[in-house]
Length: 242
Image (cartoon, rainbow, N blue to C red; front, side, top):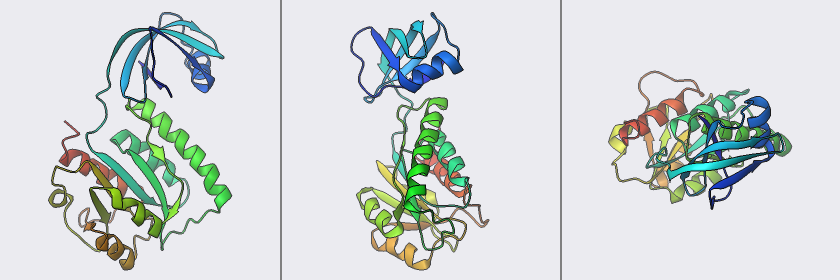
């Protein structure tokens, strides 16, 4: 069943979808009257709907059932991802959203080779957010994870202070993720490096803020593999793969 998000709560038994979503339903998916779609609202209410009329300008639906959306993890994970080279960030965002990340913060760390200017970063953020939305629809998330503006490593470390736990994955070693996750955390921040990893001073900054260095094993993973491995482990250890 096609999956969509509304910006507002839905009151009543009918709803009108407009804009790009309507165009996608009518033109790309070629959905007709009588076909079913799902709409999820900001308060995580999942509405099963039947299309009443379909046009590229607007799609009218009737709501046949409403219930809480239970597809979200019970832990909010923020990925602080140091910018990798090329278009690897697009893959990271897509797969991280599928795995259950709540927020992605692109970071320029000391060893980042990719250092786009502000204008380029603004364009990239728009594309990254679009990728996050498409991945959320495909994987039937309850929310569309936010891709924040790109920040420096120091700014990211400050932002992370509100998390219950912060973990920086360091190629020079650290604790296992299993030993760091206590099961009581509601918010977890994970820091993943670019191709060159992190400077020791960056790891120390997170440690000084109460965070911990962790390892993903003896093998060195690529910049686009490490965040997906880290997220998978955290989701498993917190019971969100059950």
